Image 1 (cartoon, rainbow, N blue to C red):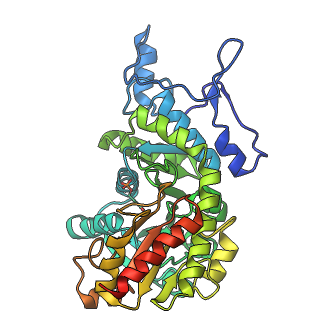
Image 2 (image 1 turned 135 degrees about the vertical axis):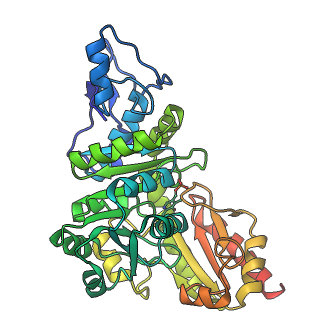
Image 3 (image 1 turned 90 degrees about the horizontal axis):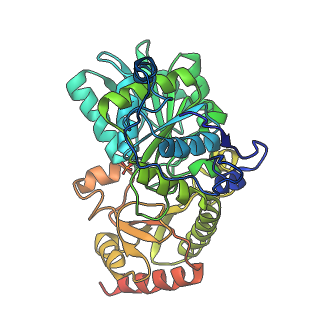
Length: 405
Ligand SMILES: *Cc1c(COP(=O)(O)O)cnc(C)c1O
């Protein structure tokens, strides 16, 4: 990431305003209002010294796309600015970001403390590190600071958390846990995909690295895959960037351009998604066919107090609920929605639903589901920006369908 003579937005602006004004390079006499798209992955030189120097640095001058490119830089700069970090490194997907970050931080014999309800892909990568590389992993409940402290050992290198976890909406007490990690010399990595930098900026609360699946809210339109890590510290950025270059965890310039464009509406999208989710959570909680609603914006949610202190502007766009009718009701609901789509992923402008027991968590037995706190009738909703009354009418007719399924 470099600052290529860019017209930067005022640091005093609030995050929702800053998203609308990504840095753009100045041109002669005027300036483009959107960042230009440099598709080029190869850059030429007039002398060998400058070219050799470019190979030694992971930033400027540009030499080859796997190291960086001005359009990828624009995206990285925009996210680093929003998250309040020193620098960012993008990858082709959220998993590219997470695996290259952990791979560069960990060696055989190291130990990781990880939240017990992580994104499935992150969990299976940690399982793989444990099995094949001798990196031990201890799962902890992020609500329980004492158990996090107790889990840390002399060889612990990383504490891995998610700001808002799936599907129960558990909220990690980042200030408290990052302070415990810091005291022990442990690097805190926070997956901030569900919260976005508009609701929470983990670096402000003591995290060292923030990772995102940019595929979700940052892009926002389910048409681009990407990932990005933001670093509090420039040296850590350099270390992870080098590993990402080795691994080939790079972002395509056109994807970077789409992500930067999508991010300009992040503020209005997330505000609408949070407002819709809050309203739907309340309406669902009052319906007799719903046994429980998991949304940190509800006062009854166990993470509500932490969420109230940590999150600004809303409680996120994802909610889950348990149907009284169990597995058949869950399947019936997921297949009955018309405005919403039965689809994986989240953060899209459109509302997406999934039935955990028959789709995302289909490989778990009833017992394993229960242990993970997931009922057989659990529906996850990634709430979009549609009119909330249309969404509710759709949900109501899908709830009706659960009674005759
Ligand atoms: C989707 C997701 C990922 C993985 O990101 P991809 O872009 O699909 O590779 C990681 N963490 C969370 C919380 C996610 O939702």
